Image (cartoon, rainbow, N blue to C red; front, side, top):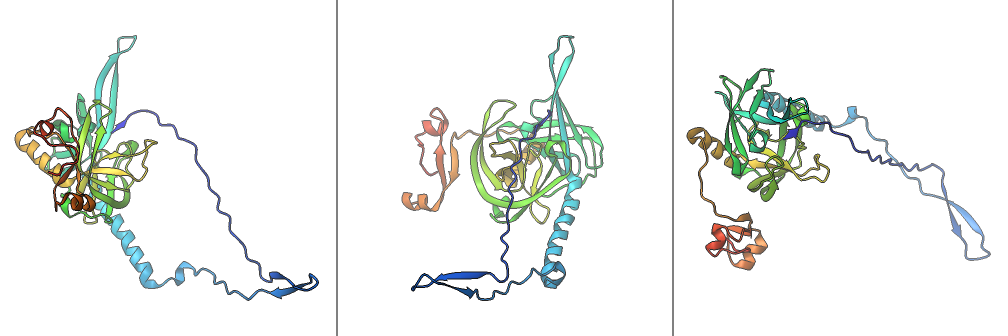
Length: 331
């Protein structure tokens, strides 16, 4: 989510790297044992090879790099038409002249059904009176919102057909180290593409929503070093096949800008919620009341279990605590 405001730039840190020059004909002085005399001995000759120009690089290596470069460019071109820019607006308080001051923001989303269904984050569109979707071709549509508030997923329906759409990947098959591409509108810059890797899977966290003040529990996040900034929320995180592996949702950063630690809601969870919203109009589910975490090998061995979810935390008045589940249990 990108609140519409001015953004000041902080100071830049410049680092200059000094090169060391080795001169030909340098000599070393050796202190003699007698009389303190010195003798000048030539250093052994060192052959320093000059870097080969690009044209001399092995053809096959260069062709591999070119192919990779072209594949990413082709991937970006193929997915951008299905990514949308979302603007939201509320009527704010009246000023001294009695005029209402609009409060707005912006984010991203993507079309996952060609009949006008768009998926995004709830914190991008939730609670706003006016939602406008801007397509890749510049057309603008008002959007109707269906919300899964607790899971930070929302559907925006626009009155359009035959739209380009993106398929979902099976996020259970995503592995750390795989390439990842994010597309969205950071700071309102539409169709921005960034590339990185999947850093980890099955992350869990509690993240506050600056709009509502509530704290959401996210239980299946994909961590990525792909640059994600304010305004990328709701946009797709894609694999090299152009399939959506996650919904870009949050960053961990002391500065408010990308620090190489971004998080996306896993596609399997997002897809299930989206389909349920379209079918039933809302999400109805039970509340367990735990913050689960991935069961690490050392914990599994120490506890004598092979699989399960580690209870990292839980509210004392929640259903799980009332049922006797404690922090540190495996369920």
